[in-house]
Length: 198
Image (cartoon, rainbow, N blue to C red; front, side, top):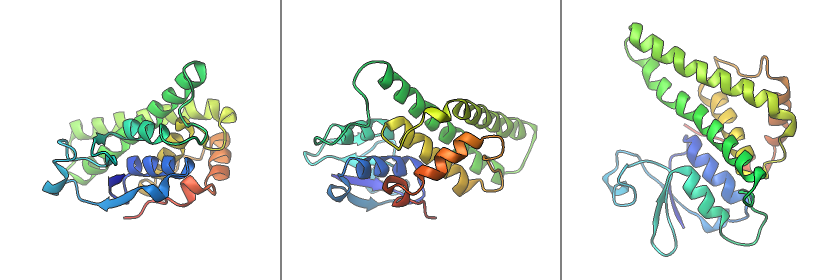
């Protein structure tokens, strides 16, 4: 497998964390590439990372798809639970965590641009999404485990991205249970070996 990646991407981190959790990291070749590099387009017409070329030449993109593909390989315990309530919960958690990332990544660009009322309103809307998501995660933090599902890995990667890109907006105040969970899982290999750079 060949993974197109950027070392700062939280979506790439999620994919890599899944590969580590499943014991497949050594099977993933890394291809560090810019999203402006024309060489990425044949792999992903959206020119985004992560993108994955499977061993049989199939191109996969978007982190939920790639993570589920990785989870389909081998016999290690699955990160995507079998159909039923546990699966829907893990997928919902993944969507909530990805939503945090979707609200924070573009906001970095917006803050760097000249500010007007429309831009300030957009930034406030995105901040509100993150605040509400963190409050929802705090309410269920006591149920989170040791990075054994795609939901837990996604949540941890989202919190790590907030630490990485928004240290001036600390998320821990008001979220003691979520903080305690995150501090416990931070030392586990899927997170410890994938700290963002850049």
